[in-house]
Image: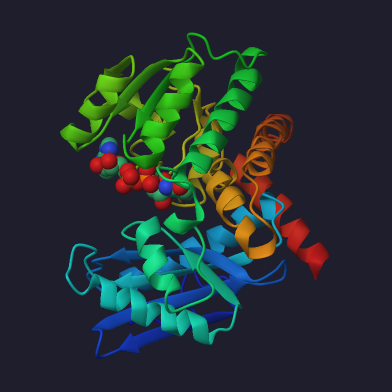
Length: 349
Ligand code: NAD
């Protein structure tokens, strides 16, 4: 295994905890990146990583991303994340979630965790039976409500800000958006955009999922291999990370990229490549912070849906400000967003 302290993504993590529980067949990692603004908070991912290195790389990148996401969203929270090595469809899932939750409990509120890939809001309720520091639980919302609705609402405001930046108006009528991924965030973003009159193109590797969306909304279904190459106003990645790289960026015809997937840039320098191609890129951790803004309120105040939504709508101003600064300074948007987030953390000491 690689040297943890010398790892490319280590980036001054406060703690990296390797968790093991033989009875539950649990192998997991908790990464606490920064707690200057408050307790670390971030989801719990369950994924069949093939190596510990792969899991470590994922948790470190995601945990640092959470520090940035919470800071730029103005939340009193730091950044952390945990990953469980395992198949979320395994019958061992419940036992692993419970064992993991017991370890999170031992951290005594220094780290709060929630849903992520492979861990649903119902799973978060299972974890909460063993641990006080679990949020985004199904039982915390009215029936049928999903925390992804907060995320998608932030996505709508991000795309409105992009429209204003590109066209001088945030009217989305006829605004062309290509959405990659028709899962939780992609489908809910489709709903918002369609209500605002946007022209939507959508792709998913899972035909059943994309057909469900196509049956509900007026969208054009596109080959998943081509979705990023469409001549549209915005390309919205809502599926995978590392989607923006040397190969894909020269193929983009969109004027902007604004989507809800985490870690869209394969490497930081791809932010400069997007700028060189005159593509306005909205950093993922800025536009996809709505889920965190809405779901995390249980940690530090009484949840209030209306207040959360108006807070999430401020993503519009943040996105516009970053795009304008990037144009004026000729600096990649991701760098500007990181500087804003880091200034707030430094001010907190
Ligand atoms: P999801 O699993 O519900 O949906 C993802 C969809 O992408 C799936 O339907 C999958 O089939 C599809 N997909 C996978 N590879 C694809 C490809 N190559 N081309 C097209 N489609 C592909 O996940 P989600 O909750 O919508 O999350 C999507 C992304 O957004 C993830 O990166 C996640 O970390 C991020 N994110 C989600 C939330 C949230 O509230 N759910 C919050 C912040 C960030």
